[in-house]
Image 1 (cartoon, one colour):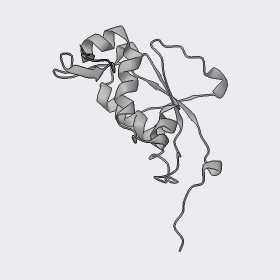
Image 2 (image 1 turned 180 degrees about the vertical axis):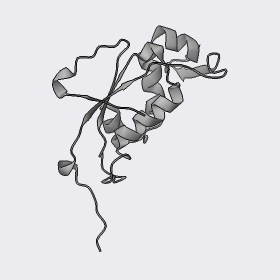
Image 3 (image 1 turned 90 degrees about the vertical axis):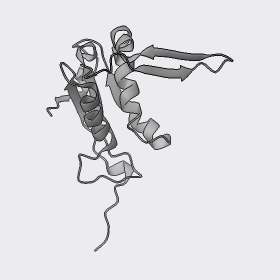
Image 4 (image 1 turned 60 degrees about the vertical axis):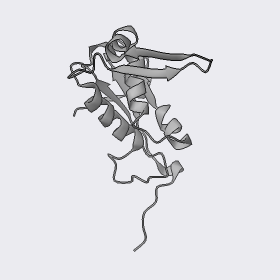
Length: 141
């Protein structure tokens, strides 16, 4: 018996909408990363992007549990003395889309395949999104 390997041309992609209202950030991110990667499909192949497109709405209503509100996020601007930081709670109130995107991106592979998967993620602050033409289906946990 031969091992099945999915080919990029054979992959059927769906559009899924996830409502982030009152969902813990980490739980939401792991489910979205799993869908983007394609692990929810029986044709999953590690070296092929078999995942679906994910639209996350109501990003400002996501929850942070425990002491994550005060947890610091660090990055570097690239300039001398350019170490920057912000708390997760502050980032979530200023730019909730960026907070969710950053969390999901960290759960994807850190290579060109992961970048390809990340491009299929769309996050919106409110309840509306411009992807009605793709016929997205609501996703339930």
